[in-house]
Amino acid sequence: MTALKPVDHTALRTNQAVIILLLVLGFVFDQPLLVGVVALFMLGGTLVGQPGFGWLYHKILKPLGWLKPEILHDNPTPHRFAQGFGGTVVAAATLALLAGAPTLGWVLAWLVVGLAALNLFLGFCAGCAVYYLLNRLGVPGFNQAPPPGTRPGFRPPRQAL
Image (cartoon, rainbow, N blue to C red; front, side, top):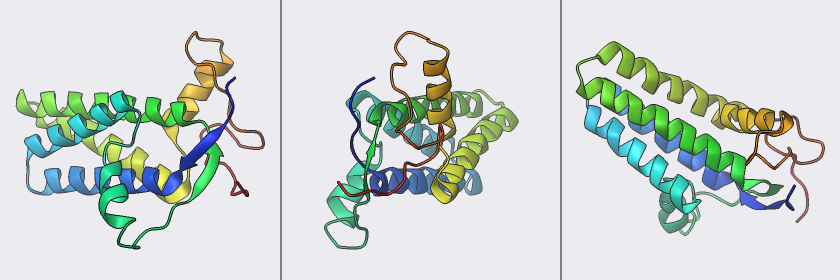
């Protein structure tokens, strides 16, 4: 297990809120390409190790003082895994929508909306929980356990840094 790092959970929640907003708008206006844009940002963010829409928080919302950082001792890798897995599901949704399978596409998109909302509003990251389960099962590459005193998938408690 590697040492915990400072993770800005406001950036993570901003990312989840934007994902929810854009996927719902894609559904309301029947715009599969908007769903594809969400997939690209999620997967691109995963590749660079940042929340896909973190730029919105870091470049606009935080400098304007609209949002304040919430820095917690945490493992960033499970969040990256969760975003990558979600981005893959959103990419599959996009492909289904473009291939003429709207029911499958929108079900997949709404699955990600629901899981992002669970994380945003209740502090439970299903992708992180899967990561920690794979760690517990000893799957290679999943080498981080939940922060001490934290149930797998839940946001760590606030603490002084």
